[in-house]
Length: 330
Image (cartoon, rainbow, N blue to C red; front, top):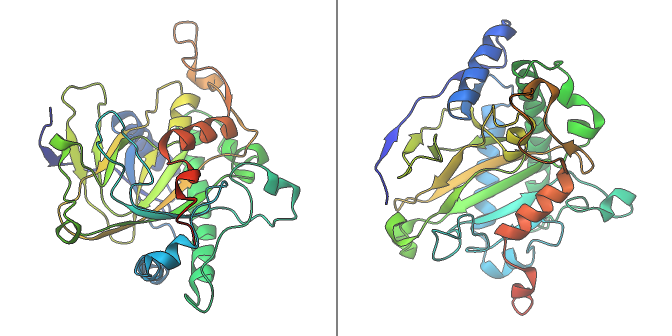
């Protein structure tokens, strides 16, 4: 059963606010309330944001044969075709009606680290096809990671931890941070206007996997995933700002004090582009209940798990097997 979608407002966190305690209070309330908030004054120029969107559009406008040359590999780097991902299999009749592109932390092929899941060289369009594309994406990747680390420091304080708790090498000092470009085709062109009652979505209802996500676009969220039917609320984009949401690992770390919120994409017929930046800790980081989030009356709700093991399982659960493309990859 579907309910209607209303609009919602979120707390705004300014990274230039000298009153850190005000930022902590706003963020803590947002994390307790919805798991979503805005981040403003982050220092990434509007010119760079606009260029990332422009370069993303150029890629997705390429012929399908060109895009498939960069099909995602076993490291989850590269192009993800339409319907490749299914985020809500219980309610979706097909996969998500979106295409995407994964860009991770660049690790050279001769680096021992490149043998690990999610690490390795990125796949890049050729300079002849898309000049400047790699340069723009790498600059944005660096800048987004800087912003994410600033947000993580406020989260640490909100959880009564040291401000630099997430700065250590095993946390965000050596992260599995992933930039994902997303394109949802105009429904009137493809006939794929979302129809939740029939299980057709741009992106099915899901929570993100890691620590936080920085999103440059709009979103539709469900503040209470236990409510039946789900009550969905529209979050409007803010020019020059990010919508930030909490991921599943932060929910595990905080013992459900801070919750990872369900969200989805419902297509109305308009073409849509999004830039998502997913922030996860290092491979060997053990995600377990924080000491400030447990007590005798509130014991840990989740067993410890490494970041690598958790992410690998989530990607396996939601993405098509690569062997399905073996006959079609150029």
